[in-house]
Length: 482
Image (cartoon, rainbow, N blue to C red; front, top):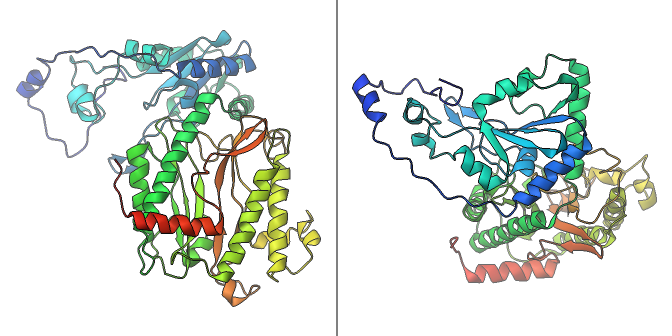
């Protein structure tokens, strides 16, 4: 029995009498399934070629990883490794890509369950438990890549030349262990360079990727609309209701959410990564929602809106909101190819510092607050202006700082612009009326030759437009995904 066929069972599984075992092994038809090549297969092939060209004469190993245990015998829903999926289009667990010099690629993957063994009906990851797997030929046709049985992987790894092999580590213990016998320090440096190169290749999105992002953003817009339609103006509802309504849209129209939804009502809006979501909305207070749907091909949106629960901003809420809006607009207006990532950051932060000064909160001048040896304004802004976006909500994270945080924007980059102001409830350095107010506005932006294109423009940003939008959604009433 090979690694594809070893049954995965649980302690509470019933015994199988021999007569039942014999009966289960017989009488199964094997129907062929016609599988066309995916339209995006060529994009994946070009990415593999570009990665191989970056390391001439070397072999590259990229695993996708395995399901992770949630509790005892229950697993988390599997999500493919982002870099692996970007290179192959394969979304099944356990697969490993081996990329040979010149771009020749082999995808080692699980095969169909043999009906001559018990795995297909006894194993918790057998086909009667999880559904039919593709044949090697079907997967090869669909993805446009050569395939081989996962059972052949150990022998293939054993034959890899240590000095000419790079591995994307941390996703598969079998792969990690197989290539560790050579110098660990040298291997670590080589493998870190592989992760860096992949991240930098992902900075520029091709036309198919941009279409995927647009699709995920469209789902996200519908999700925000769904939430607005069930958000009462005159009574409280739980943050988890809001989270659940958005998740329904994300799961129905896409793959799910791209990250844990942040739903912060009232003072929870000042907690940057508030994901407990056990609070309740309060009329007269604000509701901050940072949510994004992940599309079927794993590209995710990342959008934040802050709305007045009652339907209308108070004068002070609107004053703070307008500061954040003007900050975001300044950042968006500055975006074009060749502009430094830090330049966009400075454009946003300058407006925030000026707004804090106008509120009487900033204890120093705007120029002093903006000085790199000071940045006192960050007490109330905390984070940067945004980040790259793609198959991960924080895409390209392993890129060199000189290509990312200290680099220049390029045509085809997609990034978020998300300034915010957060006045903590216990902050004695701000007036009492500001405490507990948190506002962030976040949009997903494509860099083009002409400048910035706001992909999430389907959701309004100006304070008055947000109020009108919220009223219109409430008037339309609740809806289920169609």
